Amino acid sequence: MLIAVPTGVKILNWIGTLWGGSIRFRTPLYFALGFIAMFTMGGLSGVMHASPPVDLQQTDSYFVVAHFHYVLFGGSIFGLFGGIYYWWPKINGKLLDERLGLWHFWLMMIGFNVTFFPQHYLGLIGMPRRIYTYAPDLGWNFWNLISTIGAFLIAVSLLFFIVNVIRTMRSGKIAGNDPWDARTLEWAIPSPPPVYNFARVPHVHDRDDYWLQKHGDGHGGAPAPRPAPVTAAEIAAIHMPSPSFWPLLLALAMAVMISGLMISMYQVIVGGLLTLYLMYKFAMELHRPAEGHGH
Amino acid sequence: MADHAAAHVIHDPNIGNTGLDNRKMGMWAFLGSDCMFFGSLIGTYLAYKGKSLSGPGPHDVFDIPLTSYSAALLLASSLTMVLALANLQHNRVKSAARWLLVTALLGLHFVLNQVYEFTTFVLHHDLKLSTNLFGSSFFVLTGFHGAHVTGGVIWLLILVGLAWRRQLDVRDYTKVEIAGLYWHFVDIVWIAIFTVIYLIP
Amino acid sequence: MADQHAVAATHEGGGHATVRTYVNVAILLAIITALEVATLYVPGIPNVLLVSSLLVMSAIKFFLVVGFFMHLRYDHPILRALFVGPLIIAIAIIMAVMALFSAFLLLPRPH
Image (cartoon, rainbow over the protein chains, first blue to last red):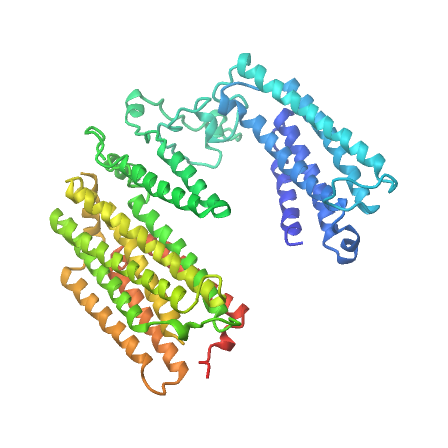
């Protein structure tokens, strides 16, 4: 219940976010809507767990598995894909194909429900959790088969996503900085963003600053002034940290050291000495660098 | 405003938006977390205090004069650390290096005292980490503290080495300052351990 | 160069303790430590008094080192917050763990 009550508020928030908005049915929105619907279903089966007499039957059965897959897959994974489709153009500079995206969505939506909805029923007729096999005469065979078919359907849907990625990275449309005519500031910089992200810290006057710059406030007010274009001198003045491989090596040495606790004290000691040595090298990398760095 | 300040210190990548040196903030944040780390180990020791079913207890093994001497060593080392910093601030690198060396040696003496104490517990009193609750909680707590001190000694000796090779001066004040913060922290943890573990019955 | 800004900043940070102050603090710490050990050998001292006076003395030492040697007294409040916040949490954890394991009931000195 501790989770369910605030989550209920969140569900209303998400609907409120959509309300009155300019809705464009593209792939990210499909996944977002799918997320809200599937996550709500998972939340409902979760609330059923909160009642002790009901939970007495549900606990440690496949009902629990159905519940958490609805919230984790129907919730988190669908949400993740929504984000992936939305920000892909910003990260990679290429647009993903809409048709393939929708094939991905619908196959995944159907496959997901075919996989996990029957598991509610399986749990209630007695199938326990955390088993890898079961006797053939318990009456669970049919719906487990349906669930498996659904799982393969999910795999097929992911093929559509992978093909989408490969095709568009090779020869897809270039995204430009603002393919969605978006509201927020990340869409004001090029896609993919330069290594320094923002050449100049933006002056933000409003929550929807970038939108106001493009379209005005919708009440007849003039669009907010666009900032002056970034000059070459500003970019030259940006100081980025130099790349270094010491942190990676140090992390590996620490992994060797700690995993040695399960294996052998000699490994702990060797890993520990290596860690100390690499810490030293890492720290010394920027100590007294060649003149011209001004550290 | 902020932009002017940013432009002014744009040459020093260590100064962040707060106007403070990030390394100093980072060290204080780490020390805060280390507080919680040692807090949980001290809490565990206190939770198990008096509950060992067999084996030696604190009163059978503790050598208060020795540990008091160790406490004095660390307190003295805190003073020498601060003197090293004061010298470095005025670019008196040789003096700073000397005080850093004294600090490191005092710390090393402390560690050797701990080694002596642990060896005595294991060999003369048959108290090992696996003997009883007292052994486990005591050795884990003081062992981690000793490891922290050892790390600090190594750090200080590296700084001494850098100073001797003329690779340390007033420009590196912050680096030595954060080494000092770590060192003082190790000292105050010992203040807590000494009182709570050794003195309080 | 860069750290000279930092050194200047520490001066701006509201004062800097002198070497004399440091030595005085060190002497004070030594005296308190000696008192702590001496308290242990006071004959017939009630347990409550022993424990509370030891805790008070070590707390004083703690804050002397943190305030002066670690310069927190003169530093920016952010640094103070970064340390004191987790310190309070740590003390709360110790109290909670002790209470959870009935340690407070067993503190009186055995025999």
